[in-house]
Amino acid sequence: MAHKVLIVDDEAGFTKLLKMNLEKSGQFEVQIENNSMKALATAQEFAPDVILLDVVMPGLDGGDVAALFQNDPVLKKVPIIMLTALVSPGETSQDAVAQSGSLTVLPKPVNLEKLTRCLLDAIGIV
Image (cartoon, rainbow, N blue to C red):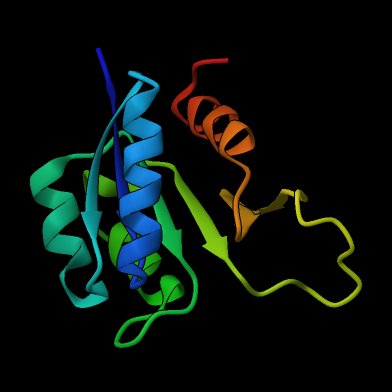
């Protein structure tokens, strides 16, 4: 059974490539939402096992979208992995993974192997 991944990111080229690579592994079924304003409705309809969420987007940013998910009775249980091209000051490794509360943050561009491990870990499959 494929694990359901929702990608919320305004960069259509990035999301299509990520969807293709994740689905090629046979482990994931991927839904894309490139409009942050529609992210909540898409997530409610798709019922993902894990959400990949961009931080910087027009309309609602990743923090706003995450708050919407956290206020939904079903989606609040779904793990969120934040993706960002923003690197914190002093950050030297593009492969760093930061834990912020219950959120995992991965830098863009993302390493596919690291992302796959992170997704499986978030779902509870190690």
